[in-house]
Amino acid sequence: MIDIRFITFVKDNIESIGVLTEDSNLILDLSNTKELNHYGNMLNFIKNCKDETIGLINHYLCKANDSKLFVKKEDVKLISPIPTPLRNIICLGLNYYDHALESQKFKGNSFTLPEAPVYFSKMASNIIASEEAIKSHQELTNQLDYEVELAVIIGKEGSNILKERAEEYIFGYSILNDITARDLQKKHTQWLKGKSLDTFSIMGPCITHKSSIPFPVHLNIQSSVNGEIRQNSNTSKLIFDIPTIISDLSQGVTLRAGDIIATGTPAGVGMGFQPPRFLMAGDEVICSIEKIGSITNTVI
Image 1 (cartoon, rainbow, N blue to C red):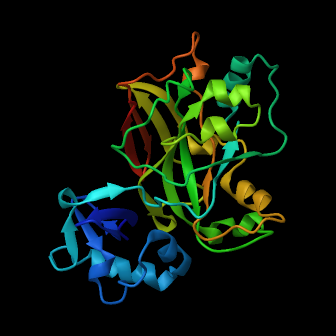
Image 2 (image 1 turned 90 degrees about the vertical axis):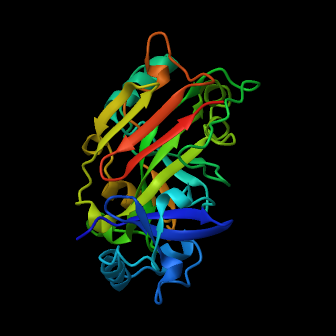
């Protein structure tokens, strides 16, 4: 089966959803298909997507020579696959052992592993895409940091979900760069402000459907700054894995189709170096995850 990678794009000032072909040069424009032209946006598509929908998309992807169904990637602008999220992004803190260690060293705390998932939320009325600029907000922070994370996109509503049924509630996976102002994070104690400045949420380039990624999810994850690899790990090293996160979070909390869960970041963020190596205007950050792709952004 062909890998299914959903995108949101703009052509002629109209926002549409589509699927990348295997070579990524063409986009199956769902609005050009007879059966899939009524969804409007990614959130609505996720909410209504069925197994037969994925089967139909596979069928269409085999018709890449039909020019009426496809548009050239070079002729459109890719935006975040979910540009306006349903709710705040749900985030996991300290979910890789090595990052938990570097984080507590930076804060001057003694090291202890979390006994339960550490949740926080990230306000993101607009999620920016690859190639869009990260605002440095120099008037507010001088400790701008990056965090590459695997984002899990929930596919259907559910609460009190059993671990062994967690995959049923997943639509797919994307890359999130959780930009953070470390000084604001420390100043306010609670992390919301330091995580939520404008342009601090970056996601893309696509949502890879869960049918294209074996479960449990073991993917290489990496970030680089100005061509230097900073983070290099694998999602198999999560302290609390994806079934645990979904099951634990859903106890008493209803997850909705389109919810975004950022699963945490590995070691190698700017605050982890001695001395810290925070982002500056002009720096280029690339975040990559196996089978999903990469997002590239420059600080201004």
